[in-house]
Amino acid sequence: MLSKNILAREELIMAALTAEDRKFYEENGYLLYRRQLFPPEKLQALQKIFEEHLAGKGDKLSDELDTPHFRDERLLEFLLSEEALDLVEPLIGPNIGLWSSHFICKDPMVGRATPWHEDSAYWKGRLSGYDKIVTIWLALDRSTRENGCMRVIPGTHRNGFSEYEPVDGKRNLFRSQIRNLDDSGAVYFELEPGECSLHDSRIIHGAEPNTSPYRRCGYTMRYFSTELKLLPERNRNFKVWLARGKDLAGNPFVNV
Image (cartoon, rainbow, N blue to C red):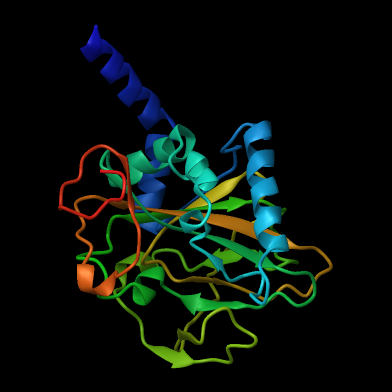
């Protein structure tokens, strides 16, 4: 009976994404999931938590609310949820660590641009590899081209690390951007609240500034295969959780 239950659970997890979804993600490095990740009441609870963090941010800008789950463990209900992990498992396997999270809010009219970048470039030297890290980008507000939705260059997750050049940190979320990039093939992630996208940590992505009267907030939920090893000397005071399955590389999970 137990084996049948386990098999049924595995089939349910794989059904979260179709075979076509998984193939598209593998080839392109991203996927738009145009369904509600959480039930309405759960999404509303997450939105309420975000509003609390926004109200208490002090001198921080609205796009600087990084790793809020370090300070607010209520967020683990969402980050370690079956809804999120069932979406991630078909892409990186059953042994999953929680890498990080980030409220990224672009205020109306003044929201900074997110320059073209690879997430993996900012984590270079912190893990043993970057091929099995996936981000869920969950829309808390409606996300459109008008208010600076995320955009990607499909297929660039296979290119390796890019060359970077400095940019103005007052106008950009980061202080560097990829040099000499052809963005003519960019795909824009327009999402309704509660919908999400998934992207490989190596894909080139970014967002234009928000010059509209409409706020754009998303919650990034980042996961890695526990096959990857965190390098302790480059991750001091950084906390990771075992989200599902087994610790394969001997990582310092706070909940193990």
